[in-house]
Length: 118
Length: 109
Image (cartoon, rainbow over the protein chains, first blue to last red):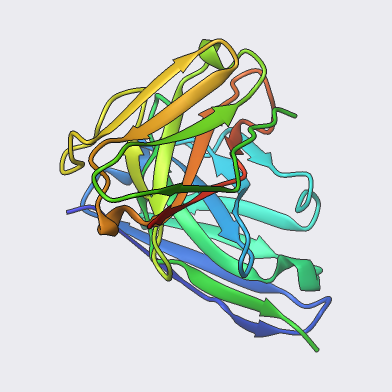
């Protein structure tokens, strides 16, 4: 069965860095585009970043552009999000999600909490 | 970038029909997807490609999309349907392709 398992969240000070990972299993990872989506406490869903199946196409939300870097290792069935210059407003649960060619996210991980606070 | 607007809340009695709207400029020309999210859980896809249901989603969930409004309809509402619902589109013309709606809290009275 399809599984997405995020890790790497935690408490970090403003200006700090964190690297999130998403381990995929149960499907051919290299066939699918992936995205990171976050949800601040009590708020709605916010798309963060997209990476194509090969990794050749990448997009970022304006709120994270220049600070976050998405990447993937298809040999390791893993997705990553390097987060630098973290701000209090980056505090959220971060989900990785598998994308389908029709644009929907059919599988989501359980999420990992990132808290940015001094 | 593209904006999707949902009502903050919808209240419905058990057994009745809930309709959740998602407004966007010419949204009828895009594929709309819907997610259900219960407290403390990850979102779950309930409708994709405007009106298709993933396996395991009850037939009580249906979707439509035309003009500037997409609609998620939940028929014969049950207590377990109480959740937040989000619409989402893929905006292929943008470098911010994934757009989520503002979310709607469905309360079962």
